[in-house]
Amino acid sequence: MKQIISSHLIDYSDDERFCFALHCQECGSEWKSTPIRFSKAGVPPLSEAKRVITETLYQREHAQAKTRAINEAVLHFNSCPLCGKLVCNYCFVICDDLDMCRTCAVRLQETGESVMDSLPDQICIN
Ligand SMILES: [Zn+2]
Ligand SMILES: [Zn+2]
Image 1 (tube, rainbow, N blue to C red):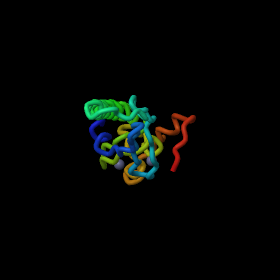
Image 2 (cartoon, rainbow, N blue to C red):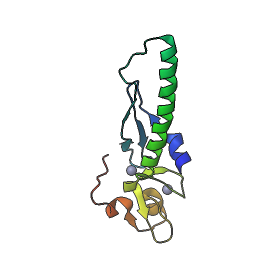
Image 3 (tube, rainbow, N blue to C red):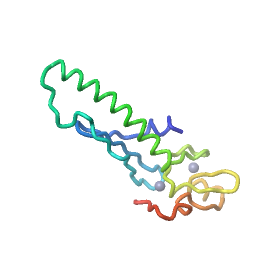
């Protein structure tokens, strides 16, 4: 699951902060991870040596932020076991035997509750 998310993750990071996004392959809604500020944001390196250190630090923090974004995304996305689509909670249906995306549920005439319906506080933004 985390590998699937990782391969679909869109990198919105810039020099100052790390942020990642995912799109639901069903409804197209975008989810963004909580942005994490780069520890050296706004601090220009004073020398070539410092620049190398800053760059390495950036890469390390970027990788850590990506891991966190993936852990966060797991709570918002599901992978359909039938078609393999990565879909948001709103588009994922909990059925009796197998949970699946809305399209597959309609195709197989399965009825179930959306993951979203069991989380009434959250709203899926299209
Ligand atoms: Zn969706
Ligand atoms: Zn599906």
